[in-house]
Length: 464
Image: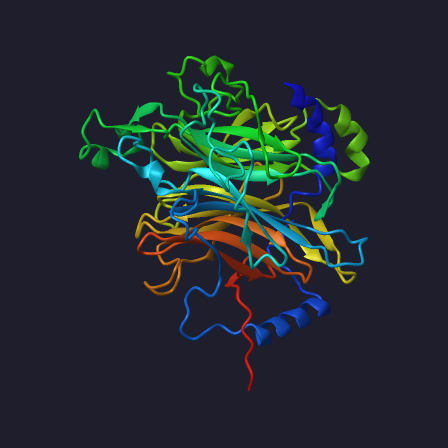
């Protein structure tokens, strides 16, 4: 694979990109405290609004690729500290679906996956969608569309976003001439039995021969020089994927690199890729270590035997060839993730020092993930922590659904993505769903990575 030669240089420049040892708290400095006070004074929640923290909605154009459902969003913030100008730029990639993918005969799963778009912002709150998109995409306004060149591909029916990485020269400083790497999942029109994805009780209510298409999700990678037009990287699987579900009945199962004892899986999706940082005094050694796990991928899956929705992980030396390592998070009966764990974002623990620079913990990580309650079936955002990216300890709820039935995110919140801001705050972008099924992307903020508050997205001054 010609792009494998790029992988280690990407990792070396990307090591500071993966954002956040023993503490799950953040102590703000004086500057941060002042900023927090100013924020509380300026941003007043409207009395009769429940969507004050929404920053992105489905398109109002009925023929747009993102007119029906919004899914995972990944936001990156870039700036040049050497410039005297405020050149901060936010870029959002997101996946979405239009109604044509739900037409009779396509028989695709009722997800938000479809195609991947792009939007930009100067402040991370007011967004402008790219209405032109890539010249080689299959729809206008799409940055990465369906695979129309390889009929045998894993991504011909629908695709969804996982993560976007880019070589960095600092935590939030874009390097010139870098290459973006997108990890995404896709489904083809291959049929599988619906009963495979249901427990015994639900399976009894479905015809035995009922089929669904595009549910056996696989994970792929793509690269781009501008973040707009993408080229797929051919994976080792015959379908072009770089990571596939472990299925004993699959004729290509012998080609899957994995640790012994991995449970069988029904799909692999929503990849979250983290660069395993190299300590400054170990860079020379790491550059020559071909067995080092430079990349960690966390993916959502369903276990074939137990029907559990869980989060698995794989490791890689180069970011393209992966080895499955097992399951890191499973549902805990009787809790808010009793019906499943999925769609995560892993960030490095960090604090803002007195000089205004982010200080990262040497080996502290937080995973924000989507938990599904077995009590009310709603999706919420939970957290777990780790010191080694392999063993995770659950921390519990960090963002609940909207308080009222009329809230735009009353039915569920999920697909979290967390970034750092200059004032010591962390901002979370998440996807919410209303009781009527409408989806949007909202924001929340925190100083300590645990106590999240929905953020005012529109400027509203209060005068007394």
